[in-house]
Length: 275
Image (tube, rainbow, N blue to C red; front, top):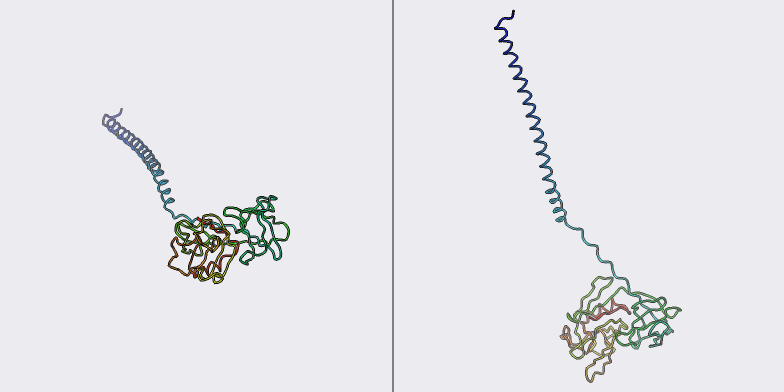
């Protein structure tokens, strides 16, 4: 027969063991819940950081110094055609059209005849010539052996508003020259021309300075009583104080120092645009 005291002790032991098991189970449950909550919190933190990180990266990319732009490619050279010695050519109003001018191997000033090509159509070249009026071009047949082909990388731009002549070679600005332009009533005519002659100014007097770059263009509005012809030119002057003013009969006057650079760097046939 079991003693009452022993039963009480046994029940007490079992009760304590049960409580310990219940406590351990509750602790494990709390740990699982805490771990799950922590993982979820970390995941929310990472998700919240993603857009900030992307925005920061985008901002960093935006602030990153950009690579320098590639330099513009140099413009293509302008084709020029030189009339061979002892030869002559005719200019037509269109390919195989009517003759509008006849050209020899030399210009009226004694330079070699060199024609600046505006465009091509098969063997036909559309060219500028002093024998034609402003804004007109003629077509020449390049077949045969009357013409010698060449090219120039030089270009001249005349900016009437700023009274400047700009020389570019292979697209690079080489010289910017202040000039006198045509006076009111004899304004320098705008248009596209070409250099036809390079002449010593002394051939025509001190008024032209050291040098003359004759152009294919003409001055349709010469001053009353003018006897100097109607050909446009970039030339020197014996009145340097007029440079930068509207004071000429239509030509462009520059300092001898600048003219010598142009004479050296500008070949016959170089295109000239007056704006």
